[in-house]
Length: 517
Image (cartoon, rainbow, N blue to C red; front, side, top):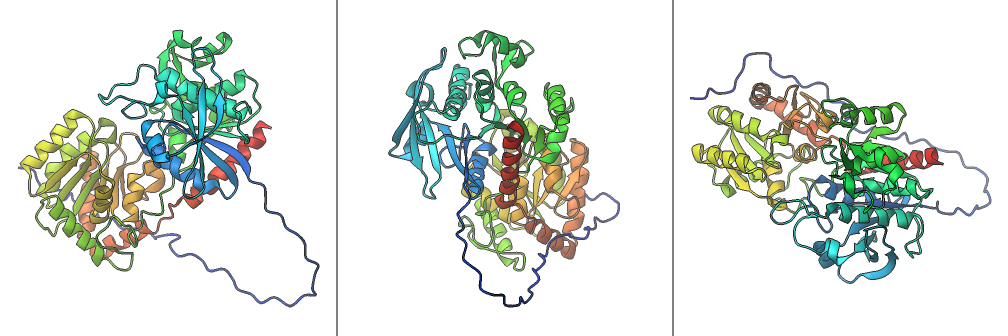
């Protein structure tokens, strides 16, 4: 019989919560001055930049990049004339509606010609859609078929996207607009930095790595089909294969990742995925940086339309009502114990095998766990087995639904997030917005967003024993209502909006353009 988690030791004490109250600006009185002549002030010119992405949650989302692609261009619009380029998948065409054809891209080697459509979103954000039915109009996700296998022609599909971005930058697409900077995202767009260099296009590029584990590896024999010059192929060689991501790292003027800690960690062999030496050289040259992602403003317990009852840092009753409703939705009995949430892909990288191992102890200690997610079949089976074995303590929705996920964040007391590596992570920030304290492995963006003992709990080693001890700390905190409330407030008040991240990206755009010049 599993023993309850209640390890001996000192109770976790919250550190002094820093920066939770904003300082008011001083309000002084100013003496009247003599009238002065009026000077005409012109609005600053917003520099044009093209945000190139393989997904965008306005239309289609396969991961965190989709949410970033929807939020970051909008956060930058005050300082930059940002426009988005995305392939014309069926979901994009359906949601975009009538497209205005505004340009055309010529072919290159085996890369086909494409047309460019334009749609303006309701808030005015311009989105260019790359149109080629043979490449992009097919069922499945942006990267894989309905059967879950990679498309055989992914190299051609995303090289075409990259080539189109470079041609737009060169002013060769027939558009009445030309960007002065390309912002490329992950391997599907990274080859654009190479095309810029190989064609002598003097437009700077910034490559953001959202997950280094996905590199876009293809047979080296494809280089001629992709229009890669023979002399350039060695720079793309990754153990005998072409690496799109490596091309971007080598040729982009600036590389950044989605957290400060991840930018540091990928320069070492443990998380460098074979590219650590190259990334270390870029870091030494000042060309590798990290910026933590932001969270959409709609994740607000005071106003979120997905929640049945709203709440705030000063009014907790609504959170309790949300917890009662989620327990009913998942057919769990009402309980006075803590509610743990898992909102994640159910995969090894996310540490879900560790959650499965520790879950019986959580149940024995009086906790309940709600799972929302899908992923590897073996882990899905393990979660279903747990729910069958502990029906009063565990329940799962194998799949994903945005409305339900938000309700689970709002209902839970703790979020289990023992990721083995995590470039940024959004779930922990969503949970904090709703007063749910993350229990997370100290890696990547989790280090940068969870203040141990203040806004959540961190453990150093990705193992079941380390997770078990950290969960024990959470249980002891749960038994101290004053401390629990203080930590909840601290988590909810952490500044995590896109305003801050957008400002940092705007500064990075300016530095990238200046250094390239």
